[in-house]
Length: 482
View (cartoon, rainbow, N blue to C red):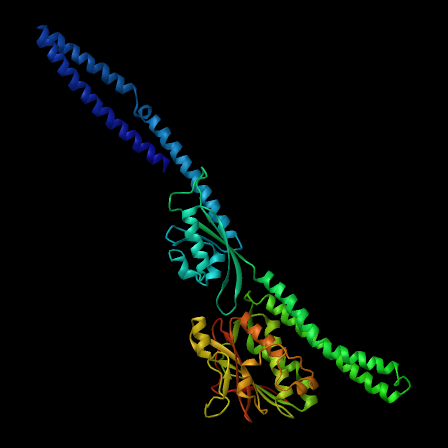
């Protein structure tokens, strides 16, 4: 590149020298002619003098190469090119730093158009095509855009707290500052703005988790602790010498202690899931394999209670999803445990995995009462076809649930039948845990129930990868345990 510029400069210098030679010849001829006419001297002397002048000028040009003429200009061009190269190198370093930042960073022009967005910003916006679009259409944060407009005119940095909307809310803080030139002045009356965003969701969730844990634990542990203290007082009093009363009270105390242990474990599990709810999982797993492992782990419980469970997997189902295996295992485990407790005595449970909408409760397709998003709504939110969803359905044939209480089933500590829940060892947190796990996986959780017709719990996930090869057109029971 620089060699091409040097050749062009030398060529231009040669052309300039040729023009200068012609102008010098013409001017000197004119001056010599006027002098001859005015003095009446011999024209041969004037002609000889003119030729001598031209010869001297030609010798001067001949021994003064074009490179020498071009050197001053070439040096100036090289200095300018060096400055531009250094500036480009600095820009590349700055862009590389922006690309490597783990936090979202946007650069906006004076009109709010995104000129640059790093990968973290694209992830926050949920799109790879954000550059060239208006900031307000990419990130639904009006306060941040208004701050960018103010900063572009006032040239004073601002900090704005905001909450993103979507399936999972994220608490963020945006630092908006004007981009400045080397001399410290803002680059123009309408300058660019830098928007740097910090995700404070973990910190805020941790604060809320501590408060919720203290409130929940103090409320739920109050009754079993009071019961334990009462029995201890009784054992130390009139039941001190009564073996039958001691055996009875110790059994109840053990049951209450185990209940508190389950409650603390569920509270810790729910708090951990809520803390990371805004961070989507990255691992590729198979939903059908996880469901099979859960059913296998429940085999002793099914045999003990006489429960019957059928796990049916659609032939050729695409069950590959991006998810956290332990959390999905826990969600299916909670739903199966719930079905065993409330699905009748003995419980009959049907677990099913397939693509598209989960089957309705009745064979005719008549739906029961529902709470939560449908498959079509979940697919629309994720921007995909309904057939690109994979569901796991846990259905029991128990007494069903009243329509009015369906929306409250995923609330913390909500129980339809408090006495029955406590007798069965429930903590009231199982479905709340399932809901938050599905939120983290950006899926959907739907409950369908009919009085005297049982209840179905449907978990929807987005598929990943190609579907498995089909072998038959029928549903084959993968597990049948009694």
